[in-house]
Amino acid sequence: MEMTLSRKVLNIAGILDYIAGGLSLLLGFVVIGAGAFAMNNPEIAKDLPTDLGAQTVLIIGIALAAGAILTMVYAHLERVAAKNPAKIMPVWVLSLVSVFLSVGSLICNLTMHVAYADMKSCLISLVFSVLMLVIADNIKKEAGK
Image (cartoon, rainbow, N blue to C red; front, side, top):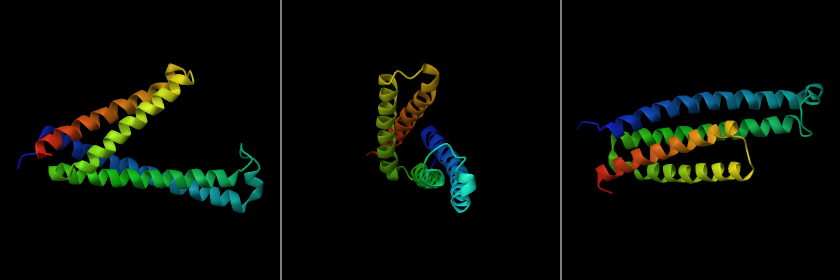
């Protein structure tokens, strides 16, 4: 069966998400290691710009690693859906959630009067979320769901 353009794009997005997730996971482990190192060396932790110091660095590393794992799960779902359009629903649902979260982030930034230059990442995130939702919707229609 010939892959449609939407399925090809979804497959490429899955590959890129695997790469981004892997790099984020690596970065998360580095940050976790830095937090653990700072916890074992209190003279380093006193120079950190927060009262919690090393614990904050450790928590940020754990959150980064958890986000990276979720990105890799999403990448796996994208690749599976690209090969088998009948399995598109998890990607479609997560894309829809991503659109809502991006809109919420944009609304929060607008209500807090954030400068346009600082809102670029929210706008880019919204554009990519909508694009992924459209692609997932095309594949959903192709699968007849």
